[in-house]
Length: 85
Image (cartoon, rainbow, N blue to C red; front, side, top):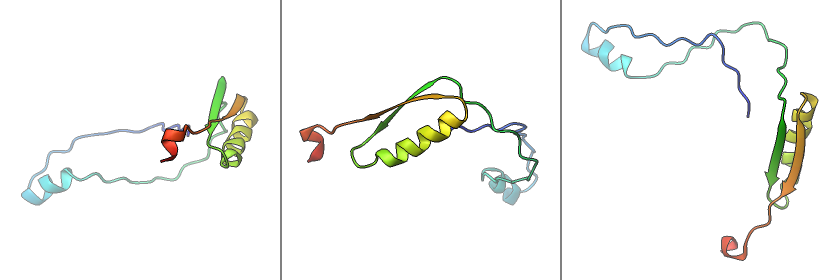
């Protein structure tokens, strides 16, 4: 999965009480909607590996990558007999 996170800032705000010190140890995520940017290109060559019977998922991902400028090679990975146990 490719993700682009721009404008992310982390700041420390000193706590004043025991409750605030505890709360500062917890992570709080806030979502602020913004305008959707144009899709980024994903240049380069991607090799997607899929298990037998799950090639459809890799093929769907491959098509999505190709729509954004990537070259994609899909390969099916065969399980070894030892891995099947």
